Length: 175
Image (cartoon, rainbow, N blue to C red):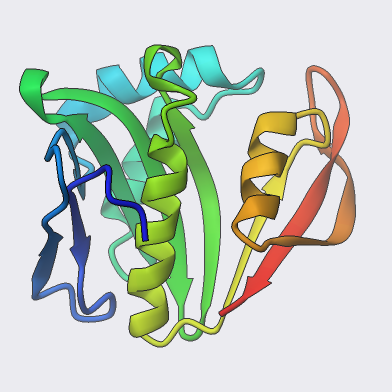
């Protein structure tokens, strides 16, 4: 488990009652529930991260889709600045990672890897057995990270992405 972030993750994903805080060295970053007030920062990161960015209404939908959606922001603690986010769905024993991004100024510092490892650990304890995600074949950095974390390519979704057109690699990991 990475020792570079301080994260808030829901201990019981289904009930969302107890919050668990992992106390980690440096205590520079933490993860918390996404709020509407975070949207300007999220949209800035989204727009510089993806050729087909999600729209504001998509993020709003994730914030309010309480039964299955788990949207979190990554906050740089010294400046209380949102520097990234992750959105995933939890449905019974399955999890779908829908979106994850880190602001370009904070990339290649291991933040995304630490967040994913912590989230995977938490959902495993909550009973998740299988995780999937989609990624562009051209997104080498993301594919490298997912491979490092044990995800394998399970299939391809043709014509999934637009501008530029590209299929999606469906990756999965058994917990």
